[in-house]
Image (cartoon, rainbow over all chains, first blue to last red; front, side, top):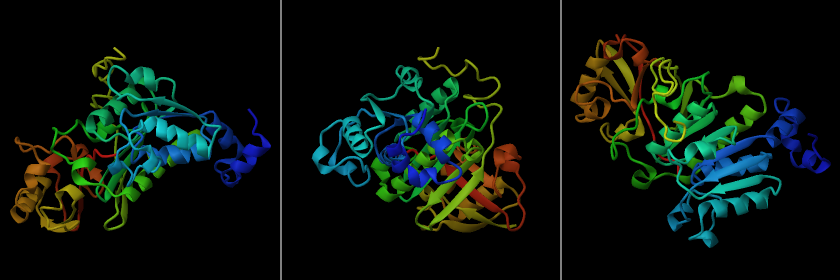
Length: 262
Length: 92
């Protein structure tokens, strides 16, 4: 694969970065990323990946655009109210960069659909808004060996980590199981500032770009990054693989039943 | 044994909004009890009904997960930094 003169110009500002270069750009063109949730996190993540010239972007979201989404879900506009989020997002992404192949899945990722949807991709970005999907993305990522970026946001706070299945701690190594419903507030109940979603979603895009560009050594693995915008403090906490992890531990193989992979 | 505790957003309603509080205890178990004395109700959000740390909450002593130390019996020393980090769900 070679870059055309137009591509070299379009991506010149990032090709100039020694860590990426022309080789990294070509790898990015060959990269396939699945973004779960075309919302607060998924919009900025997908937007920057499309701008950076990712080859293929899959978008999973079953929702339609609502007025209360527009304060943070930057791919959707007032004119898109009532449209499927994945269609609205695809239009904006291709307007920005027609070279990117965007595939849409207007479904909710669940145990039945997950494996088939995830399989053709190299990297997953979890921008979902609930624990069930976050644990599902983890378990399917681990089961299929797909690296992924996990993130969660609420109010003025975010947390994020990248997992390389088989090599690093997974989300379930850090948080063992979803809390009972209602135990921890989500954005719908507690609120979220749009710019926080932008910050964390951009970090997720950065991690995917680094993964494809060959910067695997420097990913946010075995670390949980927490961001508190109120005090404007970023902190990283070292996390470790749990040998007894139900998803990626020694005895986990086959134990954690996924309908789609069973 | 005075230590500093970093409080995550969801628990700040117990600490009058403070993101860091001072507390004391010779180990994590005593620390949680001390926190609950000063900030009633906070223990229930950190520990389950059997007294164990909840599965979606992590406690770190100077950056180390207490699950890989001695859990609630992990000894504390003057000036230790404790972080309480619960899972966060939001995204859309």
